[in-house]
Length: 157
Image (cartoon, rainbow, N blue to C red; front, side, top):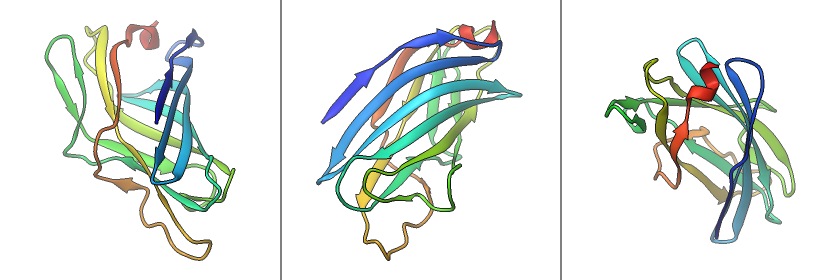
């Protein structure tokens, strides 16, 4: 099951407020991921997100973040590789039922004369027991979410 809602509101220069919502279930494990803010910081695009475990069991959340994977291309044909993912709330990517945690997914910013980009994001969830470890939140996984023809010029205004 997948659902998408895309709303964008302008904010301070180098930052936009968003309401991008991704819903997914995987063999009973379910989550809602909301990207609520995007920042241009130095030469990086920083996606602020909130994970919500909507299943009734503990779950491990992962994001595709590998330096060799393609995460974005632009209207000029440039390709951008590499991403980083980190959990902000707590020390682990394991969430209890109905628990939420904030995270950041970060990729390289495109060259300055680019207005539109295509994003490729990968997020995954799996069940865990209350006593098990989840492992690293970064993983090389399938790309399962896309944002096509995203107007990145709003980040530069």
